[in-house]
Amino acid sequence: MPSPASDTVPPMPARPALELFLGDVVRLRRAHPCGGTDWLVDRLGADIGLRCQGCSRHVMLDRRQLEQRLAGFVSRGDPAMSAAVAPRPALEG
Image 1 (cartoon, rainbow, N blue to C red):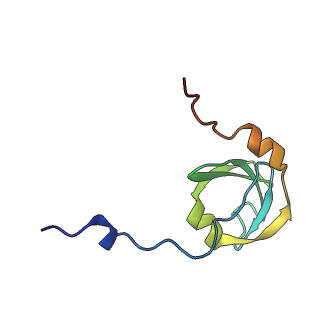
Image 2: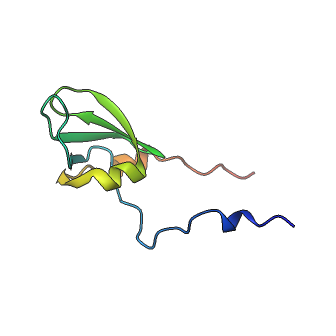
Image 3: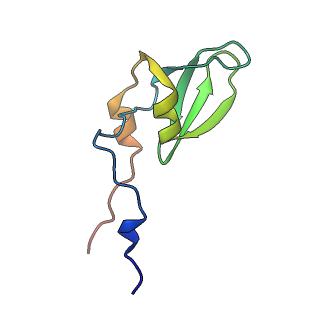
């Protein structure tokens, strides 16, 4: 009998997911090659879109990589703006 898939999947971490908002400005542990250190969060989802504040280069990082590389928040975005673009559940009917 094959083993259940739950035997091969690592357990979920005990800590909650990092709360990010559109418009957050974050500082990562290493500087970008242009010398910029601050990044604007411009896309949320499984991957996080970041735009360098120095050269406007756009990169995508998965949430886990961002959590590992995050040094801190420079400024926080607007939670209402993030909620406005969040997917809505399908209507029943």
